[in-house]
Image 1: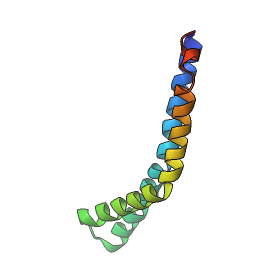
Image 2 (image 1 turned 60 degrees about the vertical axis):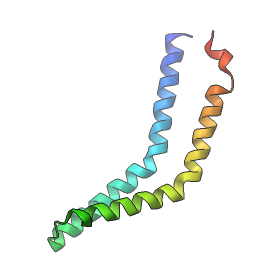
Image 3 (image 1 turned 180 degrees about the vertical axis):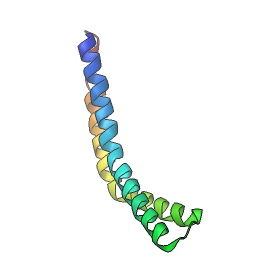
Length: 89
C-alpha cells in the first residue's frame, strides 16, 4: 500500500464521518440558534429550556435519518472490507 493510497483511505473515512454526522450537526446548530433567540426574546435562562428541545430534535433527526445513515455506513463498510486483498499490495 502506497502512502498516497493510505491518505486516500483516511480522506474517504473522514468524509464519510462528516456526511454521516451532518444531519445531526445541522439540526443541533439550527435548534441551538432558535432556542438562543427565544431565550433572548423572553429572558428565560433555564437550562432545561435549552436542553430538552435539543434532545428532542436530536432524537427526531436520529429516527428520521437512521435508515439513510445505516445504508451509507453499510455501503462504506462493504466497500472497505469487501476486497481486503487490495490493501496487501
